[in-house]
Structure formats: C-alpha cells, structure tokens
Length: 139
Image (cartoon, rainbow, N blue to C red):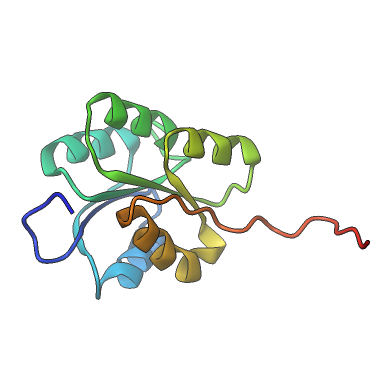
C-alpha cells in the first residue's frame, strides 16, 4: 500500500452510474474510494492527483478509452495496480491488460471476481475472470 490511509485506496472509472454504484457497494467495507469518474481523461488526471493504490477502469469510456488511459497512467509512472472491468470477454483486450500487468474482471462476474482481483492486485498478482465456457471436448 502506498498511501497514508487506513484502508487501500481506489480510483473508479466507468461511464455508467449504475456500475459505479455497484462497484462502490462491493468495495465499501474494505477499501476507500477516493474518486469515481466517468471518462478516461478524468481517470488519468485523478490518478495523477490522488495516487491511489488501485485503479479500476472500464475499457469502453468516452473521451479516452480505458486501455489508452492505462497507458498514459503507466507512462506517468503512477504505481497503482490496474484492474480492467469490462463486459468484453475478447481475448485481445485481456492480452492487452496482461501486457500491462493488469487484472481483468468481467462485469457480469464482478460481485464474485472483483474482491478477489483486488486482493490479488494488492499482493502483486494478476487476476482474470474465467471466460465464458466454450465448446468442451471430452477425452
């Protein structure tokens, strides 16, 4: 933890108010949400201003998408752990997140996966939601 707060600090970035409210509810007991913003450019500025321990970013946001916001945050040498929160189970997005040492949580699984992703991120590990089942083959 890099902050002087009693609990790990979080910056949330998502353009849907309902998702922001759900995430705040999931995190409320264990984390201090410093700010909730609704576009990528605001996320970059808030990351620079607030220096949170964890930044949770939606991928599809206006002004600047979450992936580009994360790149700018990394270039600015903000040391926060990154967690992408997305409806997209596209492996290209997941690969981009992993290349940034970021976790990836699918929105439909956030109630279960986000708390685990937070724990793992703060422990220096990367978490990814299990992708939707594909066709299985039996042996």
